[in-house]
Image (tube, rainbow, N blue to C red; front, side, top):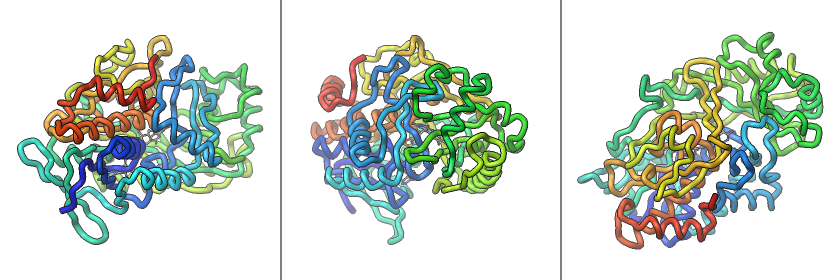
Length: 446
Ligand SMILES: Cc1cc2nc3c(=O)[nH]c(=O)nc-3n(C[C@H](O)[C@H](O)[C@H](O)COP(=O)(O)OP(=O)(O)OC[C@H]3O[C@@H](n4cnc5c(N)ncnc54)[C@H](O)[C@@H]3O)c2cc1C
């Protein structure tokens, strides 16, 4: 059996920051990832840009390792940094090149001395008296066992917690439905100046928060609308009411977030298979629709589709506290806060074509308490990223990448403190965790 101090399952935004934080705070750390590269949905599902490192007033509320990643990408020409969101949904968005990002992550993980196991999928968990003893991992060489003092579930879907028998809620409590899946794809050959000119001339056809008065001075970073074009020519079999896309970091390149697959469960292989196929069917329809009907896309071509379908929502694992909408909307202060977020509620309709959006009161940030990371029934397990303990509605805000990165840094730091002090995660001193996070510039004061 291979033993470590901390095992992180899943190498997405929350897993990489958790592994980096655990290792940099002195814990011998293993990262287990099913694909041959890290980054999670940012790389395997072509989910970009990141949104948002800022609240609506423009205060930066996510920093730490997440900001370090952005700065390193900027140095390599892999990101312009934080730029204004021309949809007006959030204050800033952060585009990046997923390929440069993959290489950067390999280097960062290696520099921190993290043992990385790619092509390894969590296949089982040994639990005794409410404590994980070991995890079983399936790789091309068969099934191997690994053990650690502390485990971090960064699989997004909460696979580790679910396999360990910790209770969870699938999607929304009333019916178990989740936000839809989306197959993102990239179109090249787009004339973004023509798109922008059309928006300026036809503001009523776009999302009402678009900063129309500033558009001529801003690079076009995102577009939500073309409502008229969609109603007249949009493929009727796709449950959406608009076109949504974001500029890439290279000229003429956009990432399209417009496919929608509803009523599928992202933890069931048959549903995932059907969603992958349906996602690519929609990509083909949309590529033609864009070329034939959207201004600026006459010469567009399909550059690539994501390696896997983007799964927004699955299990919400039960923790010691369940963050709810009221906590977010009132910016409730928690004594055990470990991260802030300025992202609004953002629900892609689980049953149809709607998109519900609600800003946090007064454009402020809200706090995420440490108790949402503590698994309710397993004493040496920390929840992370997409699968922390939140309601379906609160999740529509906590789910985005910068938040998951911030939560990951807290989870990794807490895991290291637990190991170094020989305590369970729910026994460590919150003040010490917060002090470390502040020292490492992870939690910014409001
Ligand atoms: C379609 C879509 C659009 C989105 N749009 C945006 C956006 O515009 N901006 C934004 O900031 N956020 C966006 N998000 C949200 C964001 O991408 C995710 O919520 C975020 O990536 C979650 O991070 P995570 O680390 O919790 O999980 P993930 O990114 O899902 O990473 C989980 C990792 O664990 C690995 N893994 C999973 N199960 C196992 C297993 N059993 N064994 C081993 N490895 C495993 C996966 O391969 C993956 O690398 C979007 C998400 C989707 C799906």
